[in-house]
Amino acid sequence: MSPRHFETHIVEWEGRRIEVRYEPDWLNRRQDDPDVQYQVAHLNIQTIAPERAALPITETGYRSHFIHPSIIEEAGGPVAYVLAWIKREAYAPHWLKIQTQFEQPSLFDII
Image 1: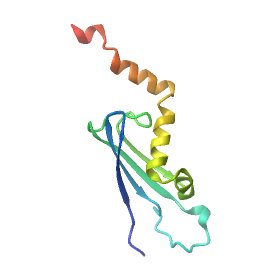
Image 2: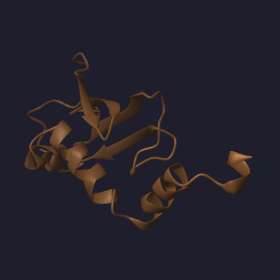
Image 3: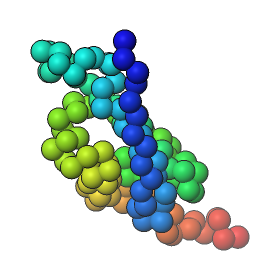
Image 4: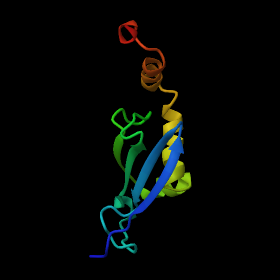
């Protein structure tokens, strides 16, 4: 069995620092394996500042995501993939509702 390979990247989005950890060969298969359809990559996405702050792709600030590595490559790498995913989901109704709650305090929070 070959050693595992991880890439770790730190990115910024809307004032949040995000750690993107990427393992292109999560199943630890040989690169010359003819069953390329069974290749699995793993993304580990976590907000590190503010710690565990919500993102459009996770309300808890943590997301584990399995995907075919070719999709990551086509997107331009793990950072490009994650940022595009976050930006796309930033327009989703669930995220807009969360953002509204943060921006508009409740009357009961003020008293």
